[in-house]
Amino acid sequence: MRLLLGLLVAVIVGGAGFLVYAWKPSIDPIEPPDRASFDQALIEEGSRLAAVGNCTACHTRPGGRSFAGGLAIPTPFGTIHSSNITPDPATGIGDWSEEAFNRSMREGVSRDGSHLYPAFPFDHFTLVSDEDNRALYAFLMTRQPVEEVPPANDLPFPLNQRLVLAGWKMLFLREGPYANVAGQSEEWNRGAYLADGLGHCGACHTPRNALGAVRAGEHFAGGEAEGWAAYALDANSPAPVPWTVDSLYAYMRQGWHPDHGV
Ligand code: HEC
Ligand code: HEC
Image (cartoon, rainbow, N blue to C red; front, side, top):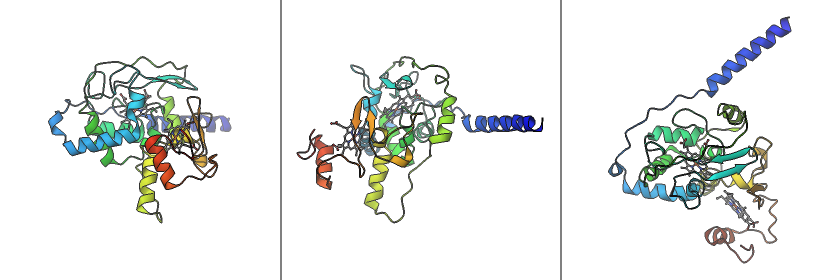
């Protein structure tokens, strides 16, 4: 009896704790800000950062308008469609404040308080600084608004319940922003910030566990991207010739290097 009672208390306390963790408030909608209210230099910085984060690749469907979403992203759990992140107030993020945008990047939570699927790589984007999020926000809020609702996701129960994602986050999300690693150079920290944050290299180059989370202990040990092998970038690299600063630079810039191919 005492054991049962203990269990019951544990379940209630645990459940209440989970709900406190899982509940996120809605952030009030705003009047879509005027384009002229954003600084031009900030918009340009945001454009560069959006390229690093490759936002357009996931947020533009083939033949679709830029950033209007609707791209079907296959996952081992079902199909998730990317959101419309143009500044259309009804179907995009036009009525999102900077605070709401910052929270979506840092915590993977939509403006209305619902949890987002990690098909949106917020487990990496969480490292992005408030300052860089401000630039990304300025860039996105000054794009062409497109009125378009992405198709519904195709996920089985209970994965179609967004509350489940709070459990996933409890287990796997280590919230940012990025903190410099002491003893490493400024250049090294800048690289780690870009690669692990906006660049989300590990989303493809790190293996994932059964729940679809990247294995923290196997950083860059090689993963998979839609059927393509994303080779190891750590000591297990299969490259027959070791990578150098110059070959990596050329490969990233041109998608080709004589020692490493296409
Ligand atoms: C690997 C694919 C991928 C990349 C890259 C990506 N996103 Fe997304 N994003 C998604 C998906 C999928 C969703 C929808 C998640 C959901 O419905 O739970 C989403 C949702 C969002 C949302 C929430 C919108 C809403 O209405 O709740 C924002 C904001 C967002 N992305 C911004 C960005 C920005 C900014 C970038 C680039 C820095 C980016 N995304 C890059 C896949 C991606
Ligand atoms: C959307 C998935 C994805 C992301 C994100 C990604 N990569 Fe890759 N990467 C791949 C795939 C797939 C390949 C293999 C391409 C091929 O087979 O030609 C690859 C290849 C590479 C290679 C060549 C490896 C070799 O041994 O030939 C390097 C280097 C590399 N990526 C670096 C990066 C870096 C750095 C980042 C982050 C800035 C990054 N990748 C982000 C999917 C990705």
